[in-house]
Amino acid sequence: GAYWFQRRREEEASDSGIKRKRMAMSQARSDMKSIAESDNPLAAGSRVLRHFLGNQLNLEGGALTSSDVHTTLLDKGVNPELAGQVRKFLSACEMAQYAAPDTKAQSPQKVAETVEQLLKDLQQAIGGQR
Image 1 (spheres, rainbow, N blue to C red):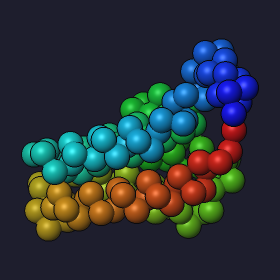
Image 2: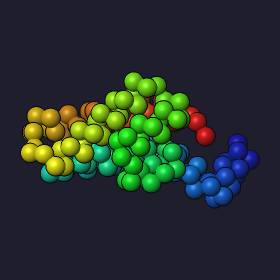
Image 3: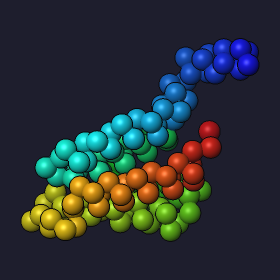
Image 4: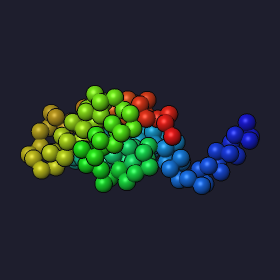
């Protein structure tokens, strides 16, 4: 018990990526509130998902394009269908930044539901890997 906890603290101290990965889902759940409070739910959803992926994969999530994310997920062994769903969602978020808003497509509740499902699926797909 105590030995395992001490060892984990030492690992986290020597490699910040381990701690980022361990905290990724709880941070994402906390960040989900920003979707409901945002004037642009798709942009907020994109930030939540990218930040989660950055933490899970020890990358700078905000700098990833939808294509980068897709390639990275495939490289990590994520199911191509899930990687495609993530790319499609992030592409829609990117397009929404430059297009006229479509209120149905970007209702905060719908965006939050989509992001929550993608987070769960991604956590299951890459959560246990080191």
